[in-house]
Image (cartoon, rainbow, N blue to C red; front, top):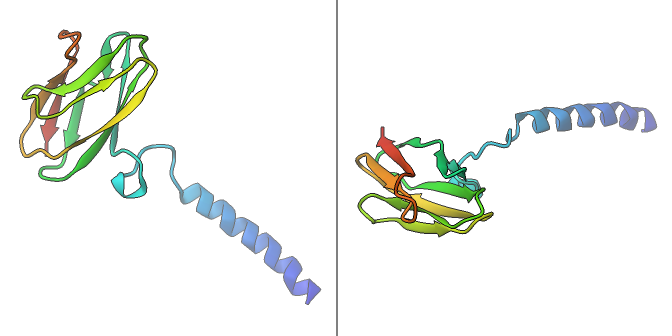
Length: 118
């Protein structure tokens, strides 16, 4: 019995390593697991990235992190979605689009981006 347990230990350890290697690499993988589908970081009064591509007609969650010290917003150009994001905070917005649209910051209109639909 002890001999079988001593052989099982390394096999379980190897399986755990393999599963860990196949798990998330830190990138958001989808709304199903509570993670955002895409992320935007605001830094130095710039959206990064400033272009996103989303699937047509599907809910897509976007995590918006504001690394600046001032309030910004993520606002679609048709005002159908608008979310303020305080400095140092993160907010999540959900989009469901069938055509591309731009976005901007309500407080700093020079900050813009574009969503394309695939």
